[in-house]
Image (tube, rainbow, N blue to C red; front, side, top):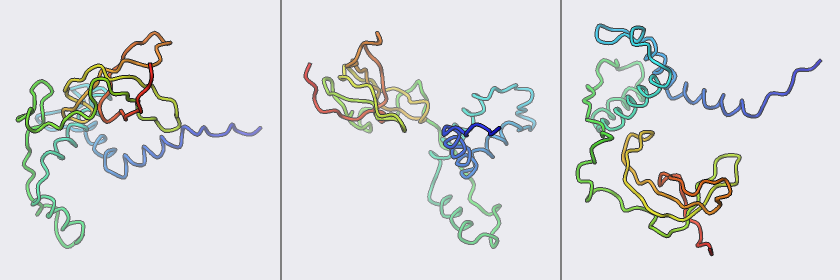
Length: 186
């Protein structure tokens, strides 16, 4: 008897797992899941998988907002001259504060980009891989909200759906998940 064919769904998961390894995220998650020092012991905290992922995300976001030229030059020097310079000689990482989800960013009204879509614009959700059908509708409103998945603020839109056969009349979407759609006739 032959074994059943492997599902095509396994391939993207393998690629995803490989990317996590290649970019050090798997090592970070593993380190976090076993971390123990006098101030923090994961075993006593009984962290859930989602909490570990959120910790890893926050640490990566913290690194992103704290990058500076001196640090980048030091790390690039290590990359280019591997073995000739110790990692201990790298510049110290000085952390900047992350944006907080309950406080608007400084200079909100002057430093925030204008919304891409206005009330009355027709939009559709960007298609997902292996999926050509997406919902579409008309922008009814927008608000500025903290995008937890990006660790920053962004525009979110209220969309009156074109197809309401499912009983859902409206939905919300982040700006980066939408694209303009030529004007539809009602």
